[in-house]
Length: 501
Image (cartoon, rainbow, N blue to C red):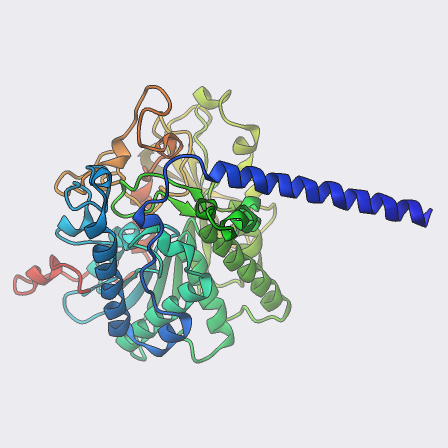
């Protein structure tokens, strides 16, 4: 019997090995299709290592950042081939979305200085493949209330997508520590320090704060605000590294990429390397392990209050992980989660997957919780009016507050990428502010036609890119801040000044 089992195990191993080799061969063959890699997908600008980041300060980081952007200009923009000098390439100086032509390039780190005496400091951390642009509206809100706003460009971002083929999460976390050191320097012993994190930035804010609970030398934030935080990722991200294995062989460099797309967005990469997915999994796995360990050892009592905004359906991160990995272990410290439900209009009844319609009930566990929960959704089935259903910590009955917003009848849910952007965002908004022009208005693109005719990724176009409930998000964040000072004529010009890079 033992001999039979051994033989069966051997054949099973052979079948699995053949299957994996076949998958890798198919992946290698598929990666060779299409155009060759472009310069922005092969050139990697120099970035500071984790040890260098821990040894430098904010001005030192800005100097290194300027060097990376200068390298990008010299090695990519100035060396584009004639067929790459097209109006839809953000790296071509003649393109309308070339960031170097804008009044301010939001790909860079920035500091927004308030008028008068500061009332606090906030560090804002953007998401994966994104740039500091994504949180600029929230940064302006904080500045209006007297906060110094520090917008961090996470290493590997803002320059070229190839930067993410080498960047890793310890480097991102070291940059977060650097930004928080600058925040502590500016805040002194008395001013509050907030952290705002979007997607991968939310993961970095949580990881930093967990570390601060265990290391007294790290400045502890007094409040976290998270938007679509990356506390967990899809199962595919866990094994994404396997998809890049053929890239280890000569001639198969394209296998290091999951998506190779035109770069028409001035403030976000469209191309996506395998390494970025792999690093996102490694970071979230580290957070999960640390949360479980610290919960078991009763070390989470120092966590500051956390306000999180999350869509109940999210194709980029795991919404359940926000609840099960993070909120399930929070102490009773005044934290709250705000969940945006799907549109319960009957026109979507036959179109929404059953899992989407039941996502809310699966996210919120029954019984009283240690945190406050608020659900933004339809007032009733087939009613476009919306309400906020809020249940206080320790309670089971929700208070219902009517909201002055209709659930748009052409939107079936929010998306991962929508939450930090107002509807009038000039790049992503459905009703963009035309006083600013970044060469393209992605929020208004709603094409109808045949597949393959556009340079746009049709899947991305279908995702709502701005938040129809953003005024509520802004209102809830504003409630955490001191009253905004009234600018005097003498310093009104400073309020409108560009950020200090």
